[in-house]
Length: 254
Ligand code: ATP
Ligand code: MG
Image 1 (cartoon, protein in one colour):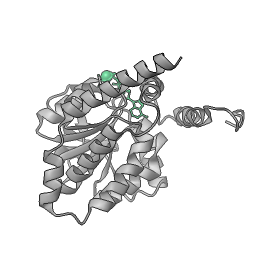
Image 2 (tube, rainbow, N blue to C red):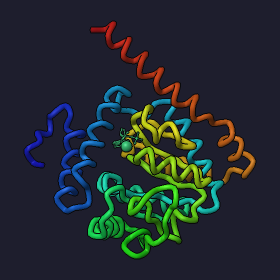
Image 3 (tube, rainbow, N blue to C red):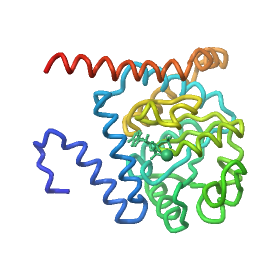
């Protein structure tokens, strides 16, 4: 950690990697999580490592949907807990959405570890740990789909990030709305979610919380109008066009 020179041009990226490695050592993050992060980093590079206009619009739609939902739940995996635990707790409090640990590589030890990280970050309750995840989502097989009867099972909207496409699809099939944060606009998660925020999770969570605070006093009608006028396919198209135009410009400037 202290081997990273403060003048390193990509210091922030390196520090984020260190956080993930540190949490892999505690058991909260799995090695596969590091690979997923690497893929994300690549897309972040292409996107210019900033929250672009299309992402601002999906964040606004997501804030509207969270405020309109009767029971939104935040699904948390190892990477999410390692990267922005305090920010997740803040979002959870702001939209009254419980945090539920939900892992692709499920194991009680890991669930407990992630629950601990969230509690240390200020969460008063964390769902989905151990026997709390006793309800099964029929769309998926075996251990991959154990959820909490107090959480994802009864949620009308699920906020998730760095999630696998199969699982996102299963939630949609059950009639839930899904807000996904995914740097890759081509992933199956991005393609199937109700709202995809093509941006880095680390930048998104605080922005989303701020937006929710700003929009809290809007009428239901106004929130509905914002949510209804959002088209996820169009937004994904914009992100792809943005990347392609940005690459063309960069090629010209070399
Ligand atoms: P899918 O299963 O949806 O087709 P995938 O198999 O390509 O996706 P997964 O490993 O299942 O990828 O999911 C991880 C996703 O999370 C990847 O699309 C990756 O780009 C994205 N990702 C990784 N780190 C971040 C981050 N910090 N912020 C946002 N997205 C991220
Ligand atoms: Mg996948």
